[in-house]
Image (cartoon, rainbow, N blue to C red; front, top):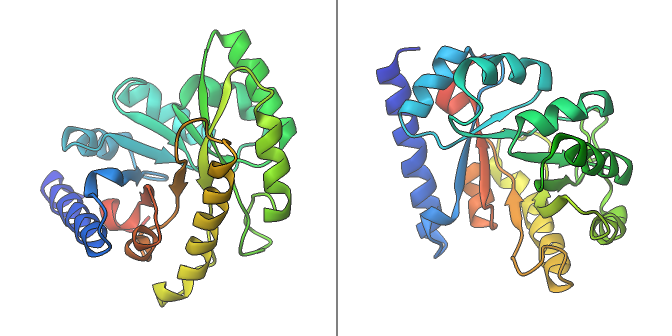
Length: 232
């Protein structure tokens, strides 16, 4: 893909984010666009950053490591949006600014310990909530969410900043709306109990096909790949 085409794609997505936010009385700047660059080369990621992509997301630690080393650890904010295996936790602590896919207390404790060993004072994380109950998707059941959020308060360096979900794929994005709405309700419930400190709590939800609906339901982070970088 040419840089010109990438520029057109980014501009279109930003305009769609703005329109979706304004439609429901929100400020466009309250929605962070995370450009999902999995399987795309470092050269394309670098071009996106030059065009103003302040946040880039990757699914796998191993693939991300090569890209981050090439593009630069401090070139953008790096988000891990895919499932994190315990044996990749140390590299994740070293490589990523935010982890969206926390799904167990055991993993949280490991990340907290590794932050100490790596000299990292703070690691923002989002709990991935499994609302669609698909075998191929990770995340915790909503029935376990409250307890996990409460236990995270015991940790010194891991900081809970929000929730993430990945609903089933639907051709009609309206069918994803109940999943986004439910995640917002869960976030609001936790926020009322101080789970995110004095913050409202992030909502990482919505991808290429359904991010406009996600924004209408309160998304503060949308994860868009195909509409920016093209088909993989």
